[in-house]
Image 1: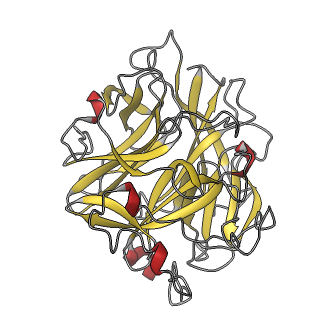
Image 2: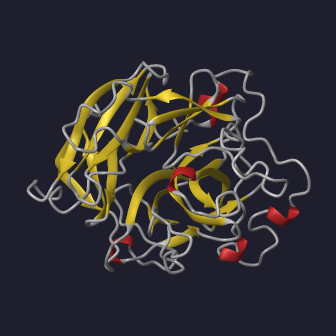
Length: 380
């Protein structure tokens, strides 16, 4: 990931020649899975590629020759960073923020295995009934320190908080829990009385170096604060709404911001994330999907491909359910060794798990191509 929001090619190169293979090309004949290439309309859902093959601890779950390599590892709401040893590390929801490590240097493909957790004391120090089950970590390296913004919440309510843990090494046992950065509840000061303080995303503007935190979910969707210089508090008077679905139940969450070629991109997940029942799934289009808007400023306004503001219900669908992929979301962006952007996410593989269980959200990823300034996904 670029230094503040992932690692740039320059930062990766500084790790030396030990990174010999980064996000290696797939083997075999993958012409049929080549993303938008060969399609007349790269923005059509017919152009959506399959996820890249990922290997990990869940490869044994209902795997056969047709799905081998698409088992991978259960990583709900993944946040992936490059560690100081040249390996990718993922942080994910539940399990006191699970830490997983890819065994092959410089490769997201895996083999992924769980190595521990961030909050090894048993819970966050935040006083919230959800403190033993933190959600949606967002991990970045700033200077020589790794920052993990995590969420705790009373599920189904806006009584929530975003906390911060830091480490110099990423490894289990090395993290310091600093507790609450900010919290929401109906009696808080605006906008924390109308928003939900979960799904944090740190973004440091590459032009101005100003730090921001994007957050939000149901209850007014996605907002942004400017952070203080120590990245441990927000400037309350800088609150700004970035997106709003005007139609109840307003299912927009999981913001992630990246910068590319003069544009700021606001990615988010839309729809029902969890609790799927194979016999009573959400109506088509109401399950999770990955959407995006863009702006010339990190403060917006963000618009979709039709020019509709995200604060007025806009949003371009980059990736949704297709083939054996169901409900992709919880996304993030990193740059590989060659400087090419990658979108990673979790999804339900309906062949691997026809029950759509919450405890088997698999890690997926694809390359990002920018067509007329808009991101489209590709297998290659």
